[in-house]
Amino acid sequence: MIDFLKRLMRSPQGALGSGIVFLVLVAVAFGPYLAPHDPEAMSILARFKGPSADFLLGTDQYGRDIFSRLMIGARSTVIMAVVATLIGTVVGALVGVTSAFLGGRADEVIMRTVDAVMSIPSLLFALIIVNLLGSSDFNALLAVSIAFAPGMARISRAVALSARKQDFVSAAIARGEKPNFIVLSEMLPNTVASIIVEMTIRVSFAIMLFATLSFLGLGAQPPSEEWGLMVSEARRYMHISSWILVWPSLAIALVAIGFNLLGDGLRDVLNPKT
Image: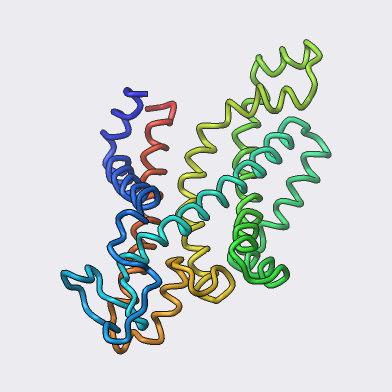
């Protein structure tokens, strides 16, 4: 583990991405304790204040402290993105590895279905699901999870196809092991490295997708501190104070960049050629 971390830190992308993600995780874990003000406390006299000693990042249209709202909102924004990516990854990996193991006509039917779903852009697919189910955090999480599953299925299948040809899989089949044992115990563990790299990168896309849904009013609902919702509410007042739009937008961009860089670093470290 220590050697792995050393190799990750030697990669510029890995080091920078790890640093950003670490800061994000600190905000997720300790955000409520780091927030200097009540994120829901309103003050008419403090509306549209710029950054100051009292309000580090200024205040919004209701006089609420932006820094406190960002600290509290980190928990919902990042956790939702990670959970949605994790669900989509698990479902997609199981479908892809199972398809690779079955092969033949079953593989063809499964992957053509996956291709048909993948032909719909992720954002449009998520919008369709949320519109059908209704606007809420849970429905947005479900929509992003479903939208990510087909892509993960195709990637997992590509990696699992090479594992399918290995001797340990042939030996398991010769022993008469059940298909679910071979998929879960023999093939899936040998595709984990590639899946983890792809999952880390997709967290950044999930954050952007959640922010977009909230921006369109289909994700988190007021008075939530979700960053995408903060951007949506701030756009109407950006001509009065740019701070209320800039800070949540920067937070979303920074977290997306951090997970993307971390994924690039993990890809370099876990690459067998390096």
